[in-house]
Amino acid sequence: MNSRRIAIGWLVWSGFVVGGLGYGVCAAENNRKPVLSAEATEALARAESSVDLATAKKALWTTAASALVQAQEAAKQQDDAAVMKYAAVANEQAALGMAQLDSPLTSQH
Amino acid sequence: MKKVVTFEMALNQCRTNNGEAPYKQADMNTMGLLTAYARTLSDGMLMNIKVKGGGALAAFESGRRFFYQRRGQLNFSCASCHVDHVGEILRTEYLSMLPGQATHWPAFRGGDYTLFTLQRRYSACNQLVRAVPMEIGGEEYNNLEYFHSYLSNGLPLKSSVFRK
Image (cartoon, rainbow over all chains, first blue to last red; front, side, top):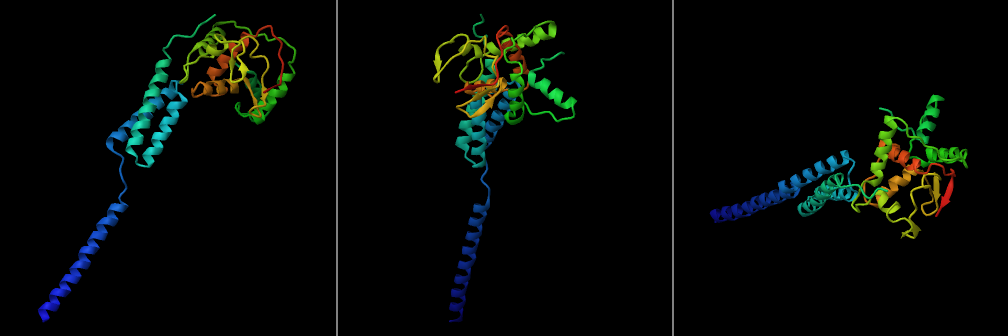
């Protein structure tokens, strides 16, 4: 009889302990800040660098500047796909703006 | 290296020589208003820009290059509209020709309900072709204004005007 009570008590307490551990793990997972992927971080850094360079050369397009802002906003939301998408636009258009400096002048009269 | 001195720069120089703080050139409520009044004192006089000496020529050439240089996502130069497509209609307005464009600033633009100096207009044009504009009062726009004003030589000045 006594051993039966002990067994039931052990089962009840172990249930609390296991439940408590499970809650702790979930809470830790919820508190952990999601991290931007390495690929997205690299794409954002590359875009920022290209836009800085185009700015220094006074060849930045407004579309490149706004794409970079969108990429930075997406990074705050930890949205990898959006960061990659907007960073690629910013990077490409910053490069096009700089390449435009070498295009021939339009007609001169 | 000598640099272009615009009318707004001369006004600021006058202010600082008299112990007053310079105005920001992009501020239409201070520099814009002062320029709007001061330019009326030259109404009827003829534009008379001289390009003499190496420094002046370099600034003039820099302004000319800016005028014909493509910029922005739309890949337009100033000349794309104001030389190649003069007289055509864009956004309900006729595209104006280059001579005479620099004679009538600042303008009060009814559509925007605000004052526009010539360089503010450059900035707005650059934004329309989706290029990040240069600094108002910076060297690029000063050189552009120098070149641009030269092409209105002999035409009468008239400030301040209203445009829709």
